Every structure is written in C-alpha cells, then in structure tokens.
Image (cartoon, rainbow, N blue to C red; front, top):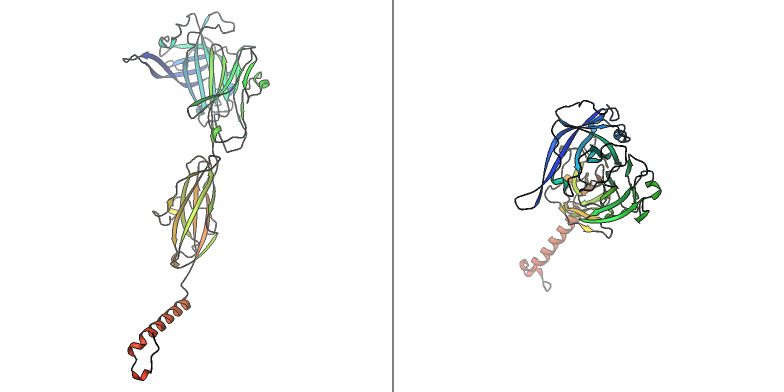
Length: 420
C-alpha cells in the first residue's frame, strides 16, 4: 500500500528525560516506546490501543504527500519531544487552547532516498514549566492519545550525496509552514573535522542575509536548497539546513561525501617477454583516489585453458582466482597528492619460468567509488636459455683450461713452451 493511502505508520517514540545524577551532572535516559502515527479525524479511535497514539487531525499540511509513491515498509518513523526552553509564542492559528506541546516526527527512507521532518503540535492549556522544561516533561501514558496537527515540515531528497572532485552539487532542502506569511529564518552550517562553519543565513522578516549559496527568491516558495560549487576534499562533511519559526527549529542533515575513483597503471606493457630464471619487479599503481580505502589484489590465469581469453574480466569468487605468490606481494605506503587525493602501489618480484609462460597476470583495484573493480593485465612469455650461447661459453671455458694446464703436462717433445 502506498504511503499516501495508509491511515497510520508504526513509529518509535524516543521518550527522553534529563536528570541530575549522583555526581551533580546532567544525564539522560531515553525510553524507546511503541507508538503509532495515525492520520484521521479528531476523536477517532486508535488503531493500536496498546501504543501511544499521535493522531494527526485537521492539518493544513498533509505529511504523507511528502512521501509520495513509497511503500509504508520503506519508511522508518521516529518521534521525539521538543523543548522550547521555556519560550512561549502563541502559534498563529485558530485554536482555543493557548499553549502547545511540541514533538518532532522524523520519517526516513530506508535506502536514504529522502528524509522528512515534521513538527507535531499538541494544543494544551498547560503553560511551559520554565526554561529547563526538559527536566519535568509531562508524563505520557502507554495508551494515551495525543491529538496533533502538522505545524511545519522540512524535506530533503539528498540526505546522502556522493560526488567526485570539481562538481557542482545542489543540497536539497524544502519547507512548508501551516500559516501564511510566517517569519522564517533559514540557515546552513557545515560541520567538518569538529568545526561548525556558518555558510548562509537569511531572515525574511528583517531581510538580513549573510553568506551565499541559497537563492533568496526560492526561499519565498519554500525552497532553501544550498549549492556547493567546484567540490574539493574540504567540501566534504555534514551540512545542516535549519528552518526556524519561533519558537521551533528543524535541523535537517545532508551529508556530502567525496569519492574520487582511482586510475590504474602497470610498469610493464601488455606483453612481457623474459628469459627463464630472469626476475622482474612488477608494480601496480592506483592514483588520484579518495578516500583512503583502496584494495589491490593480484591473480593470474592460464589463457591456454578453454574459455579463457586475454583481457577477460576477473573470475568471480575466490575459487576462480589463483593469487600469485600469495604472501610475497607488497603494498607500499600511500602518498598524498596536492589536491589531497592519494596514490598507492603494490608490487611483487616475478621469476620467469616456462611453467608461467602464456599466463595472464592481472592487478585488480577495488574502491568504494567503483561499482566493480578496475583491472590492468599483461601476458608473460618465457624463453628458454640460448643453447648456442651456452655451448660457446663452455667451449671457451674448456679452451681456457687447456691453455692454462698445457705447460704442466708438456714433455721435452713439446718444445719450448710459451711463457706464462
């Protein structure tokens, strides 16, 4: 059943409480409780009476429309309490009750296709307990029904962005509020290596703007997407789109990962000819990759066997691959390039033997930026020793021996021996 047709979703209500422990420090306990996000009318009976029910009724914003076309089983739902830190601002909608209790509802696609965060507002006659209201949350019973409306929604279609270097990426963030002309503040921050960097800020009431990356005309239409130009290694990190309408703020995470695919090269050509007994250092180099998680493997194949062909992709599975000198190939330490990508190599010493003649040797490189490993191969031809050269060397050696030993065995009949 599609999500825009389902009347309810199973959720986890993460009910957190702060307290002061025995050491006088703040501590937190979180109780994960069974809950239901139910869409219907005020006063409607709960579909699962045993759970905490968050009944969404009478909302101008339809939360389910932001999840269009997806199956309910693909959505993970979490609900959390939200603290306004004692700040009370009457939400500008027609409502008999003066105060509001706030909950964030986080809906994530299980394959990271999108994230939706909605603010659920529960009208109440009870005022906030003070600035430290999270020390004394009102108790919510197991079978309690909380009738709510969706006050604000944010959505991103890019919770996880993977890209290479030098690209332009649009980090999606859209929002909607349940009343007209809201006073909205939009901000973008980036967290990189424990640093928080403000990239953009705009308040539509004061018209004050800092930074760049978001089209101001788009904000009026609920689009707060941020553009990253010419990505580099420093562009990587966690980006946060913040949308605030006093007294609530939604923070939407967008993670940007840089993945630069390696290139591969060998220090030998596609054909290598050696003489039996000759030794050659063969080097496979992976260049210009990021991040540092490259894996290099070697294997060889006998092309004389039926079904084998030069340049064929590596066989799948360990059984179809025979590693050459399994424990003798060496991985060198990586080096950094000026653009902060990496270079790494692996080598082994190939001793030519007639047994290996005609075999294809392949270097395979795996990296998370690649859908499948990239390979580079060469075919080895081994020549036997040149016997004419051997015979000539032996003959010269024998002549030399005879030349050296002849005076020792020579008698008077030899005549005068040449001086040594």
